[in-house]
Length: 332
Ligand SMILES: Nc1nc2c(ncn2[C@@H]2O[C@H](COP(=O)(O)OP(=O)(O)OP(=O)(O)O)[C@@H](O)[C@H]2O)c(=O)[nH]1
Image (cartoon, rainbow, N blue to C red; front, side, top):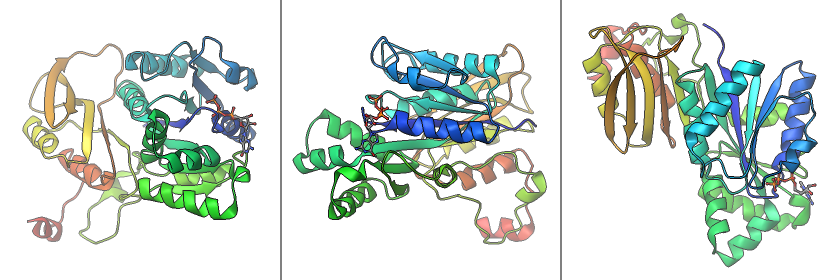
């Protein structure tokens, strides 16, 4: 199967240092011989940040609104078009400072239904001085939005530490830890971080395409790779059709921390393919005949759930896991 295209979301409040980081990451990928592409979203009609990005980097711009306030479909379409037109090796979405990142997560995973894209994680850049000031006054919409952006990050960059004292860095790090106990906190000035270190800390999503023999459940306690990270999205590409009743049961029994799921599946006991939607504990299945080549895929979005467990359950439905008697006994 083809490798999935990694997608990163870059979030953070206005002026926190997102563009500074974006440029660092683009330089890093370009030096590695990769072809990055960018989706930029600006509140104004002119993309000033975009002017700072190398002209050779393909870029889609969504101007005049914030991604989460315009239709989610727009971002999803934009991403699909960019992938088709530019065949990048990696995509980064710089979200406007006013956007709620969870809406963007939703739009990216929407695209996973039609394209081999995989949300790797969400990087949130925090302006240390700005947050400290807001934390001390504890109010306002900005404060709440920042809190939201911090809460759903898979890695936090505590930027602009040159603007606060050493004790304050410790103080604000504690605040970040309180709001998000999963994400690694990386203090920085001008987002000067080793890109490998940063990207390595994003974690969160299991690589789907491991060889089947690695996925054999031998009943041992060997933890699945990153199964308890702060996962926001798990994308599962099916290799086999599944039984419709078993799949419906699986969806119905999803852990509470998974609050959204969607996908396209082929059942081995029906003639049609189905689009399924799951939100707020309700599932909906619709017959579809997709245009073109569309993979069977399911995306699960939530907080702190174990993607390893979901993956195991789905592999089992696909009969890609060899369940040995010992393992069966344990689960009874
Ligand atoms: N003192 C200080 N300034 C910084 C640091 N990082 C970035 N800046 C400056 O902060 C300003 C905003 O940085 P950007 O990278 O454009 O921030 P942004 O989050 O993309 O801003 P928006 O596009 O408005 O959301 C720029 O003038 C940067 O040079 C830092 O660590 N310390």
